[in-house]
Length: 553
Ligand code: UD2
Ligand code: MN
Image 1 (cartoon, protein in one colour):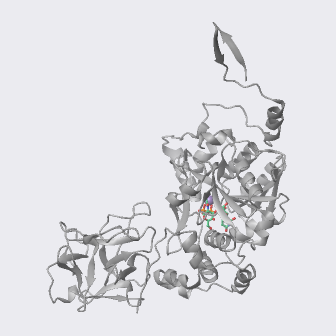
Image 2: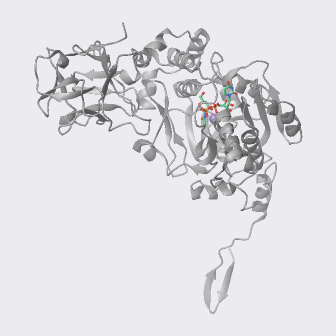
Image 3: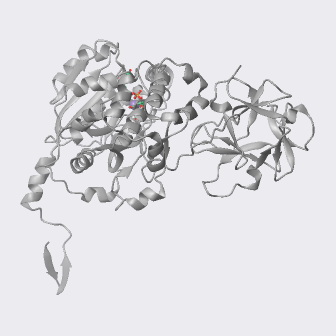
């Protein structure tokens, strides 16, 4: 440290003189390519939103691009393939020092299907411009049998001019699982790092992942996934603390805040965060460990389910799944799915059949049609589970995901909630989206037998009517003012049931609401015209008699 004297006072000069070690380290950090000079006037630079206010022909072109890719590729094409991003990591991450000489090397594997030119190549350039040359063995691009012209010769020519980038092609549509494995099969690095084909890596994203795997080879480590807006390409980042992954009983992946017990386990704000599940697309894993764990279930087609399957397997078979708060990668979440994902159901069933033991029933109850899905042969995957001596799903729930609400599903007390009077109508709850789960009215809707929004469960013990297909679980509340039923978050385990959530299912099949001393009645003519269950003085009326039915007749 430099010390200078000024008028007798000692002032410490903040700037440290770099040591030889620092200079050597800087050299080791050098990326494969340097980012070109920053042009702050360029569209979307530093992750800013692009707003164009187009009219006429150009507006039409923009709309076409959105219809084609479900991403505004008109805007994406105008943004530099080399743009810089705003800093989104915890400032402490900056001070982390890595021993570059001993970090494992990695291959980045990117499978793509019919991806737009600029989103794909921005991913590639971003990897090359943020990954230390010393650590990156190669980028493997796997074309999963795309049929768009720009991904043929033009792509081949373009990448042939890039250092360390290999392009291989599947001979038929493999789906993301087998496409990724195809890429992994030619990867030479110690660690496999998988990315989706519409990502942008934040400065310093790679080192934390590799450092953690060096320390713990059985850790599978995900970056924090920052959001890139599909329309403006604004780098939105991730508000506040990173979130962890969970799932609900439809086997849909969900995000959650980091639970208290995990905050306490961590030694610092930049320590890894254990996560019950991963979103799926972005993670690093030691190649050896990936093989030990049985890579992926190659019986999974196209899209979906593989992320939960791999998450269960990692934890149940002795590994750990973690999110590193110092590793940030942006991902463009499209407006909606850009291609058919019809195989997702069979993939989820495979995951349930291999890893969930009897808990798979909770899934089937909420998705009766999943029970009928042809999911192929899982003998090999079950054998793998035995060979690796993996723990059971009960252990996983209790130890890795203790916050999930495990439904009781006692016989005759779950399924469609039907009415004797309005006999073709069922309880139905349809929250607008998963971020907006509670506070809406329960309605009556023609019974469809598909589970999901019409799946309810009654607990004899706590006297709650639960809507627990999604996570966190919801409970019916009788509103004393409006007399309608809404859904609120259920109390936490061990907390007492609020009075307005207590419904006694009596011998005569009525639901008696304890707080208002009224009964739940199927009402056809409501204030907004939609039939709904409502609280009315108890009577003998058939519209006050309810029963559960597991599946549509
Ligand atoms: C998420 C994951 C994704 C995957 C999926 C579940 C993130 C950010 N994304 O959905 O990686 O785990 O959940 O399956 O965690 N692809 C192929 N062949 C196909 C279909 C897809 O190569 O038949 C590629 C695709 O071009 C992309 C990657 O696989 O690079 C993932 O597909 P996605 O981006 O459509 O999935 P996403 O992000 O909606
Ligand atoms: Mn994606």
